[in-house]
Length: 140
Image (tube, rainbow, N blue to C red; front, side, top):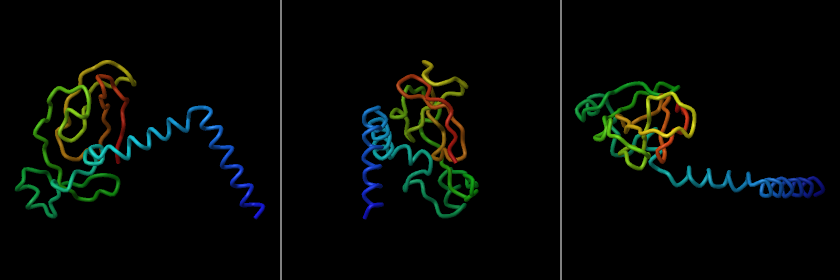
């Protein structure tokens, strides 16, 4: 009982410190953003509509059947219809990936281009949001 009470008091103190410092609110916002943005998941893993169980059906749909990610699992990677289109945010792109080839730090004003493939797993891209770079992010 004493250990349970001590753990509960410790947790309350940690949450109080985080709330006071604003970190808790920032973490909560980041988690909510990630949870609500299904386009990010589609950009990494593709969507159900992109699923092709074998190489033949993938290639028939215009895709590339290739290993992706650290586990090198073979997947279908389909071209997007808006590849190369100028963008200023992910929401302007079919797969939710607006990026730039510029290797800039965060918050540099720039235009991006829509990513050309249904999967971005196994890539390192400098994404663009609201007309500014977000920094290079590698997804694997």
